[in-house]
Structure formats: C-alpha cells, structure tokens
Length: 159
Image (tube, rainbow, N blue to C red):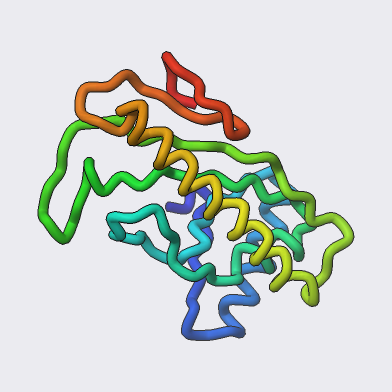
C-alpha cells in the first residue's frame, strides 16, 4: 500500500483523521497525486439508482488542498451484481465522468454547500445513465463496453 501512496483515514479519531488529511494534502501538492474517494463511505446495494448519504471528508480534503473535484458516477449495476440475491452476471456497467468542480477560494464553511451541490449533480446523472443503460440494454450481459463522458453516451469503448 505504501507504493500506491494510500492514505488511511481513522474515522474514529478526528485528531488522526486531520493528520492523515494534512499528509494527503502535502502528497497531492508535492507529488501531483490524484485522490480517489467514495463519498458515500461504502457501497450501496440498492436495486434502484440512488446513493447513500455523503460523508464530508472528501470535500474537506478537496477544499483544504484547493483542488478540483471530478465527480465520477457509476450506473446502478444490481442486474449484474446483487449481493442480497447472491447473483453475479457478466455485463458492462456504464461510468460517467462529469465536469470538474473548482474549490479554489472555498473554505471550510463552504463544504456543506459544495457536498450538496455535487451530490445533486451526481444523483441526477446516476438516474439518467441508469435509465439510458436500461433502455439501450448497455448494462446487460454480453454487451459491448460503453461509457459516458460529460453526460454523452460513447459507444465502442470504455470511457
């Protein structure tokens, strides 16, 4: 894990979490390192295109580092992997990369609004790409890899 520059956050200790964030910010700036965070904190096993509540750590980190947030939305894939039903089928899951959201000039008082704004955009895109995937049969067994870039369906490759 050290080679990947993984930063572990101890959520049970705010002091340790703040120290880990400070280390992550330093690494992001010194080594031009990107950070990939799941703002929900865990996977959702819903069969509907809905998200769990966001944790705010990712947004605090982005604001602290003054770096943009690039929301990435994965269509609901319960037809491919359904943990509760214990099913795992072959298939393709569309992913949509949205426009970056700038954090330059934002402070800790802006985090709640920032998280709410990004959550709204991501929820809307989740519903949209899941609907399009279901209508086009994209997230079905044996389909060609497909993705979404800035909300537009891209056929013939993973984006």
